[in-house]
Amino acid sequence: MSENILVSDLIIPPGTKVRAGLLKSVKARGILEPILVSPASSGGYIVRDGRRRVKAAIEAGLETVQAVVLEDGGPEITILTHATRSENPVAELDAIQELQRSGMSEKEIAAAGFAPVSRIRRLAKLNRLVPELAEKVDAGEIAANLAFEIANLPPQIQRGLLDEEKITAETVRQAKYARRQAAIPDLADLVGEA
Image 1 (cartoon, one colour):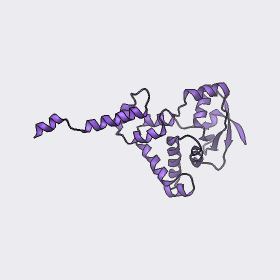
Image 2: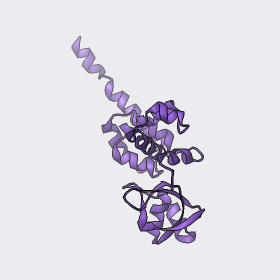
Image 3: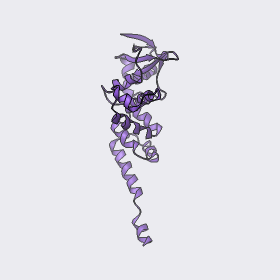
């Protein structure tokens, strides 16, 4: 059963961004689906599912949102809800890391049915993203599949992608190509060494 909760009582990660389309929708119609929260030990509620909707509600000036309060729900709720819709690997990684900080191992997380070990290890690769790109992935500005490709690039090349108006498969491919070209010695240099 959902209830109205003050937006000011909701805790979302700093840096949460919202797409223009979602903000427009929330301004026009409000939040159509209740968010999922759990009580925070310090008071208020931790948003387990719906942090972008909450951010849109804040930006739209809403005072309350409909929420389902899960008394026994923690970061695993974030993982389970993400399994039913489009990927947000950064949020999923954050939830897995929260479970690990609480003492759960990869195997325990997998045994509980939250995510297979292979998924946990794949998500851990996103720790290599420079923070600005991680924010863009979290905000949905970069597709999840591209995030994993970008995470394999050195930080300086990742930062170069920040100059792009939009990061696409083509811009990532070009960055990889430029990296390979930079690693190939100039033919004139090779001939001069002989």
